Image (tube, rainbow, N blue to C red; front, side, top):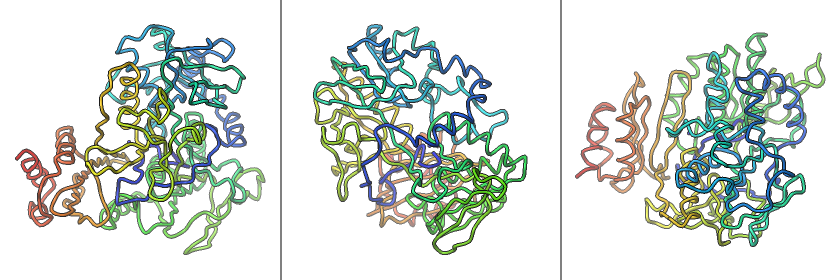
Length: 510
């Protein structure tokens, strides 16, 4: 399901015919140094207080100097994909001390979508080790000691400076080099677009959310704003903007959302569907400013190092007071380590990532790309289209697919596009495709359910439901796979979400 300064679980190009090519010249597997240093000062005491914080950061980790020069399998990246790769390696019986995971973060792999949800708004907030992988996928919790017990080496707080695809060798910031003798799995994810070129972008109080430490800093800032009456401005109307705005409002903060589009979630939501959710936000007291972007972050008069307001550009050039600004305007795949060494799917109409085959293998033998960076063929539709999916479910499944191939048991990747979000008391799921030109049928009043179905050329391509049950979710997925022949008129004639879903279920099995 989803980062402020970039989506944690956002669709990239599957919904509403979005173009997927993006600028690829990103820093190699890194974050903004100034903001990282600032966050380190803020979160140090928070990390010490977090449940298991000290142990989480230390257990299972090894410095570059303590690593072997060779491992059979090396995973670059320490996010969701890395955790599920470790799970698959263990379940398939790899020998102890044959797998290395290298992560820039100082905590073991965790379920990243939690950062924009219960990590922020739950009281008390969810903290590690509670959401380490693979609890989100129904597996056991892989806390740092799990890796020790299973013989998987974690190199935490260690960034990869260079990667040689031909030899499957990585060079760490510490200077150490490690070679993967059998397979190298690159799971570097996506980096948040941080608006660093805007005046005042480095001021304290300007936040992004992509990693655990950023989450701790953001939670502290939102809590302080709520308690002091400070105002929160969320830039972006996608997953991140919606989820952090909801979390901040649930914490009691005064919240304004600012985005350049006509409505929420323009890649997926139709104007009518978006209007339903926008009204819910307005009812909760969230203010919405459309057709505007951030132009400058301004220092507070009484605290020159802190943000005090943000100046907008676009339909309005007003200046909004802000004790906290959250930037959630997109993300870019972290492909710099592989760029120029393997085939990319860039350029006009490209998916904007690393081109992989049905087993997640790149054009370099033995080198795999998974998760956010993988540009793979969506076999479900059989039309040869390649997509990139910034979504937790894809991270989990593509990592497992790559491990199976690396171990000599390949299974062609079959993925059903799936997105979800939880805000306030709302929780929606979407399966399938929402192509440009499709007719969207909307049923229900969100009390509590609402159903939307996209129909193109007489076939259902995608289905969406607010507040689905577990049984509903299974049906939604089956409908997306079957793509039944049903007219928009017939769906609308069903009258309500449950009746419509029942009809779609029947149509999917005939």
